[in-house]
Amino acid sequence: VEPSEKIAKFLIFFVIMVVIIKSATNAGVFEPKNHKGSGYSVKIPDGWIKVRKQKKEYLPNGVEMVMFVPEGTDMEKGRPDIFITIYTKKLTTPIWIEDEFPDIISSLAQAGMEIKDKGEINLDDKISNWVVYYDKAAPALVLEFYIVTDNNILYKIQYSAIPEAFNMNRNSFEQLK
Image (cartoon, rainbow, N blue to C red):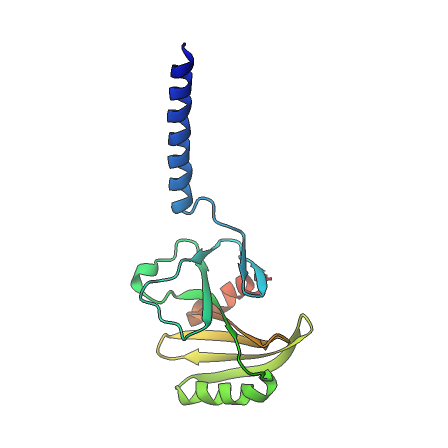
């Protein structure tokens, strides 16, 4: 076998491998197990995947969002039945979440959400306020955590599920570390 044939065979093999790897990546075979966002990193729950941003999705200026759903979720029908989202926004002025949280609860109630429970917890030495509410329009039970860091970054971490699946999938939300 001549050297030029060896080179040609190697190049063909190389191109085929690149195509296979690219196809496998696009098909989600090599899904990452972690997600790194602005100022945070989380472990994606087992059996869940990160969703690519939808084109029709609108976010306010400066807000970043990532969504995770159980593997096999049909994203074509719109809002999934079960999902986790993390919203991030760098604030221009400092706020204290414990001062703003009553307004958040009031806004949720005015929007027709049925507040089930709310409270405050320390997460990684940061004060976090949380709320559980029923969204009649979805319909879904929603758990949200609000955290503001020393760098004035607001995080809203949201877990939403149809009522009958809320407790069953909540463990996946709690795996998000």
